[in-house]
Image (cartoon, rainbow, N blue to C red; front, side, top):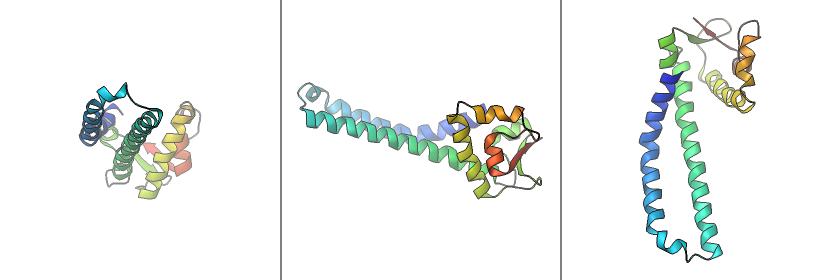
Length: 143
């Protein structure tokens, strides 16, 4: 839901913004020496940037994972976006899901996205309208 991604993006910006600022300041301090770098220094700079990129991805996954897992396993059984749409996540019996089920569902969403969104498209063709991540986690999304 767009509302959810706006909220997640705001939190990520608060966490990631300072990190990007420090990286930018560090890189800017070395701009003049970029032209005079030897191979070892260039490889070190590239490795640092790659490491920073990985760190930012991990932070992003941690923030979004925490949001979805805590919200969908809460008493409300929904994220802010799902609440706005009047839907909630339940187990196959219509009960609140556990944090483990929410975690499995979150990982399943990543898989659903990696396989060209086919995991999401599956919901249109399954009896209970479950996407791949719902099938994996034994969950339903209900009005």
